[in-house]
Image 1: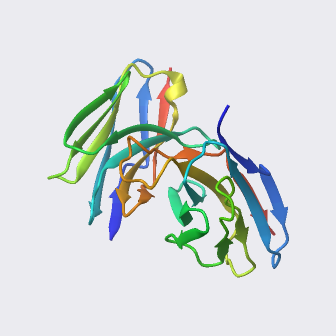
Image 2: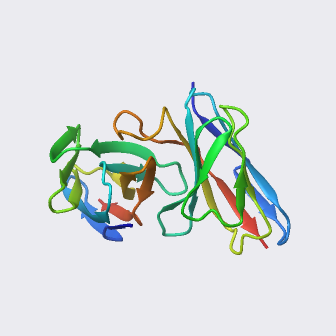
Length: 108
Length: 117
């Protein structure tokens, strides 16, 4: 089976760094993805980790440790527009299974 | 610009009525998906299709039906058998079967918010 756990809410101030963790329990694991969703909008793809280590894309980085069944999304130099929900998702059997999402609130 | 179009954005129905949600994509993607999102919740997979004329049940298929007669279109019917149909429905597509997230991430439409009373 599969389950993903991530914090429900995170609050940070503008300009800060925030880390959103994701732990998973799944068989047939093929990779961990991250998506961003602004309130009422369409989720958009942020990053994917198929192998252990850090992937960097501008202000966003994502990390995966397959031995620990753990990953995180790191957001640097936070901006107000980063306030959104962030979902981790695992790829299994041709399907993307999503976590419950972490609502990030960026304060001035 | 290529993308996924879901219509309508808001939909209201009476309990006991079937309703069909439209999803069209012009990205030339092979795979299409339907997800349901409830307030404060993650996305749950309803149905997916990896190729025309073929589709598979996701995790919460009961009370829903789909068809994939054309590559561009993947309509979802919410039937009267769905006990809690009020939700935000998201359609997505990917270039091919998700064998690698980087090479084939999901592209989502803007969703249809269905309210059944």
